[in-house]
Amino acid sequence: MIEDFISNGIYNIGWWFWAYSFLGWAFECIYVMIHEGRAINRGFVIGPFCTIYGVGALLILFILDFFSGSLPVLFIMAVVITSALEYIVYIILDKIFHQQWWDYSDLRFHYKGILSLESSIAWGVLSVLLYKLIHPLVQLGIRMIPHGIGKKLLIGITVLYVLDFLWACLKAIRRSESSRLIILRVKTETIRRILLSLFKRKTK
Image (cartoon, rainbow, N blue to C red):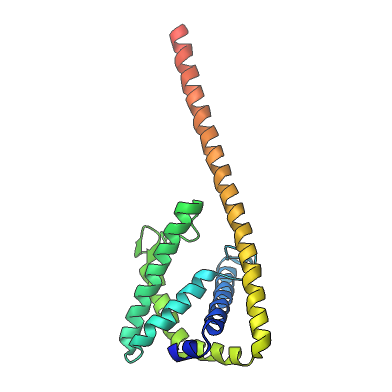
């Protein structure tokens, strides 16, 4: 993995990132469709990308490369990496946008609904499959794209995603502000009714 990155640098890492961001988005959408029976865009942006998968895949590919000699160690490290990433992303989304994109509270072994034993094991298995099976196929597909065309596509996808991400951030901030206004109005109305009730009691 590291040798491929060194030989082609940003070109490879860029394509790896977008390929796994797309595959992650497709996986999430198919999973939700099977369990809920309806199509939902599981990404933060409008486009077909879940960048948490792109970031996670890159971390897995680079870090697990040092543990590729032992399958059990590879699996354990994959569980640790994906669980840490899942926790960090959850906290960021909650703190900045006041939104929770998943909840494992209905599962038996979970931590505050953010992490669960079942999901961590599943991510560990998927990470091992990613490293051993999926990535070689993805790399083969990238090599089939003519380098000149690949560069232009990479730049185009990146620019479109940045614009899409900025637009999604604006919408998320507006939703957050609207939610805060609604909560403030409810609290204000509640306080008004309490004060009005107390005033009526005193005047009787």
